[in-house]
Image 1 (tube, one colour):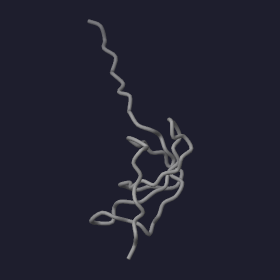
Image 2 (cartoon, helix red, strand yellow; image 1 turned 90 degrees about the horizontal axis):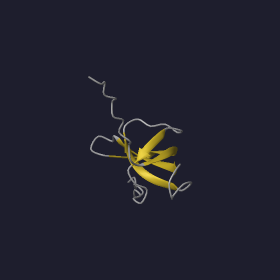
Image 3 (tube, one colour; image 1 turned 90 degrees about the vertical axis):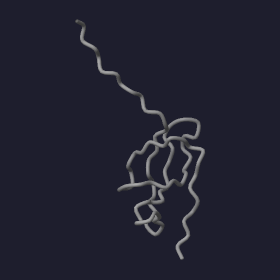
Image 4 (spheres, one colour; image 1 turned 60 degrees about the vertical axis):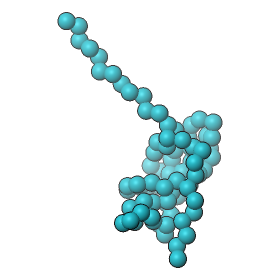
Length: 79
């Protein structure tokens, strides 16, 4: 019986680095969604900075994986 190698699943998406966190702009029912600006590190949009909404703790310099780079979050206006 031959041993089977575990299958490694390649994650799809694009790597991006968080360059700014807008702490004044939290959204979601409990304020758990942060608006972050991130720089795309690979793909056709490499070097472009876009705004995305992100769930969970984040800090500047973190690397995240985005499913696509065509969508961009609107600016959250604080009343």
